[in-house]
Image (tube, rainbow, N blue to C red; front, side, top):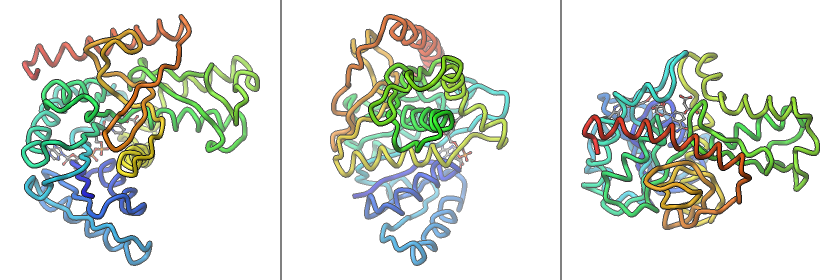
Length: 312
Ligand SMILES: NC(=O)C1=CN([C@@H]2O[C@H](COP(=O)(O)OP(=O)(O)OC[C@H]3O[C@@H](n4cnc5c(N)ncnc54)[C@H](O)[C@@H]3O)[C@@H](O)[C@H]2O)C=CC1
Ligand SMILES: O=C([O-])CC(=O)C(=O)O
């Protein structure tokens, strides 16, 4: 198995590191546009192999797409991260062109690959890849829900003083500060609804902290987060390459599911060897569906920018 990670920056390198440590593939190709950058990062990571005991080979290349040929999965992390005070949506002007050209280059050498889009604004970047790649929709998957759901579990675990691993909690909607929807009514601690255990004030705090989880870290660090984004992306790669059929919320092109069409939004899906294999219907309440529709309106507004810029 070969996985390519485009963008050897904070998220891309962390993702490659997680994939190698778990030996999810024989080879990880790390590609960046910055001369020597991916080569340096990959050698540094390979020098942990003797210490950590993994056999995956990590190969760094500068813009050499021929080296990515026949990748089973390609992760796109190339593009600018936001700075404190910015929204993810403000990145569209730079990142849309980068994501489109990277996708074109990747497809020359891996025409049937599965693409995981990480670059922001993710919902619109995933839609752009869906509209322009010509790949079946099941092979285009946005990373957002894996991360946002992990953050949701983190904030729940802080209130419940429990292990995040004992929680089931899912975020759907958009991967934006105002568009993501932590489904607190569906969240459980080992089958006990968390709404039975937390006050309304605690629930509200968890939901709002989750929604601005990325902005909070950007303010603290000065650039956006990478450990959980890298781990979330690697978890998706794992479910695909090992055909685990895990239920992970991901950005996918909807065709009537959850009442939406011609848009990519985050919904719970089964991830396996064919990409996203099935959308799971969580049977939203009227309020949850209304919030989902509102997120769709906001994401559609961003998607319109692609048409206005003649990118789709
Ligand atoms: N979907 C999600 O949940 C998350 C998305 N992100 C997004 O991921 C992206 C990457 O974030 P970081 O890794 O922190 O940024 P970074 O700046 O550390 O790394 C980005 C890398 O992309 C490279 N790059 C730029 N243009 C390229 C091109 N045309 N071809 C190949 N490489 C190119 C840069 O040289 C740089 O090394 C950002 O857009 C960020 O907003 C970050 C975290 C979570
Ligand atoms: O906050 C950002 O800009 C990066 C990101 O998507 C996240 O960490 O959720």
